[in-house]
Amino acid sequence: MSRANERDEMSTRPNDTSTELTWSRVVELAQNGNVPPPRRVEKSDAEWRKQLTDEQYEVTRRKGTERPWSSELCGLFEPGRYHCICCDTPLFDSTTKFDSRTGWPSFTAPLSPDVVAYAVDLSYGMHRIEVTCNVCDAHLGHVFPDGPPPTGLRYCINAVSLRKAKPEEPG
Ligand SMILES: [Zn+2]
Image (cartoon, rainbow, N blue to C red; front, side):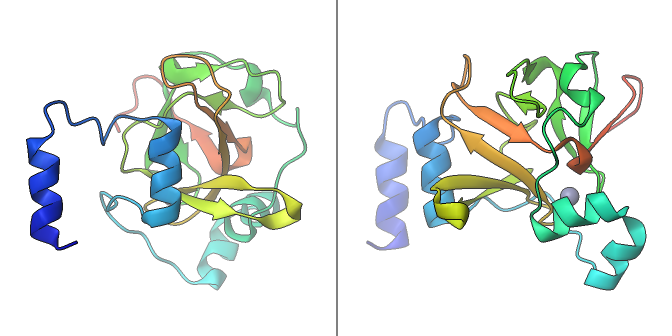
């Protein structure tokens, strides 16, 4: 299919829901490619190592997973945004945070569709969808289709990948 045909098809659809955040949209992005990021931050491995703590580096740059219940962020529901620990891009807002009882901070949606990217993750014999920062490629966690409304999604995010900004902080 040519690009022109693709556009035609999009524009003739009466209610174009292709950007609506659903599980099928997430799967489509993971399989076919992500939306362009708002900006890019790229650093060498040595630079990330220097900037981050050992645990932050292990999780965000080497796709590690923190121990569940290892952070007070799980039970924190004060207003404010959660920024990427690596590049400081605002990624999630407290209004979409919910208590998943999994031991990891959980959200129903990212702050905007372009700040996170998705990838199919077949590690550990599982079929999961990885969530990364679209700006700096930091590993954040995974997304699952068992979340509450309105999206039905559960973004299961490592607390060490995030920095809780103060409510008055711009960003
Ligand atoms: Zn980032």
